[in-house]
Figure 1: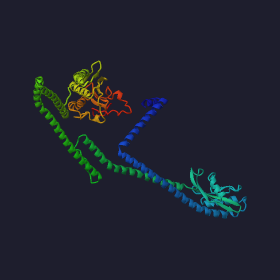
Figure 2: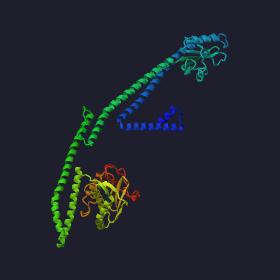
Figure 3: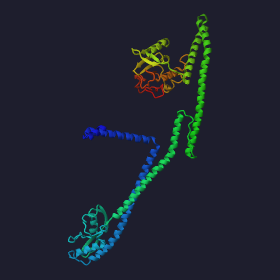
Figure 4: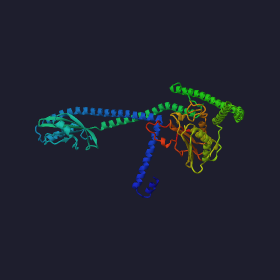
Length: 566
């Protein structure tokens, strides 16, 4: 636009390309304006109500104004026609009386009589705004048409009116515009037959409608001004009434937003005793009840977290003592009888599970209290993944599961907390081995320069519909009917989810019943960066297009606050 304007100022001319650019710019402006109006229409109840009121009242007032204007014009025309009708009857009798003295159409005195008759019937022949009286004899060519004034009446008498009067002998009228007198002046043309001794002549009254047109225009202007004022008044009233209803609703919405943001002491202002005041009072009562319930639940949650933390810490001391005794008994189990030796092994295993549960509870209590912190350092994730797989090799051998690892040839360095990332990977691989049911477990690591992702895929029991929403819940087990000798505490994935969130990453799950499950951990390579996408797809390629009989994959479970990015 600016370049075109400068070229025009320099004397250049608009080329076809400049015209297309200008047209496109105008189109974009119109599209943006339409989008802004559409957004305003969708978001503002006040605008919608006022607009609908204006449209409805405009149609109503417009129709009423049209009816009033047309009725007024018809009344004026009918009144004028009645007046002219009475005058032409009198004029017909007068003209017949004046023309009785002539018995031949070629009488030399006949044109003078016709002229005098027309002038006398017109009343004021010199008045330019007065009526024009015309006497014609269409059936007698020797008689010329005469008028009360020296005006050109050619074309003022329509063919249908002339036929009705001259041929059928009827009293008729029509409204025509006569350019010869004035500028586009409307005339009421009334005609009547006049029988004479020498034949029939026709008497026409050309009555100007200037006064009636002015009155009709004044009525239309008055109706339009009144209608416009009424529409504006209705718009103002509808706006005021709408604001009386919308403002409390907006106040309730703002208060609800503040309540949802955690400002539990926010309340609405109550005015009067009407329905809106009842709404505000009920809203305040609901907010007060919610505040009491939330505070009570927060207190219960605080007590629960404190109880979990205190119990976990308090159990540490006796657990240490029991652990020392159990280690001593376990080291001497070969000297005991077989039943006692087996009991020592069971005691050792259960103490390991108990100690793992206490560690998980302590970690959960740290997350709940907000005391969890990252110890970030540049770490090779390939080395961590290989170390996790090597440490779980014995578990995989006992379960008859082969773990296949696919990692880049080069190192993948990321700013992470190695202890927490190793715990997440250990939980994912351990979980996949336990649920693989003898099928291989695939572990894949990939990076795209801004993020790194690890996929852990098993082909075991999988996830049923709805379980994807529970897989990261605390103490949830995929098969609650299984014996407690298998499976973990139910806190591993919950802790892994918190560790991923602490890094600003994602932990997601996908699965199908009987087709296995796949977990994806995505972390930013640089601490503090925001993730946009993952280097690896969450849904396996073989499951992206399910067959018609396939029940379909369970929904993706996100390990973050937003929606999934599968």
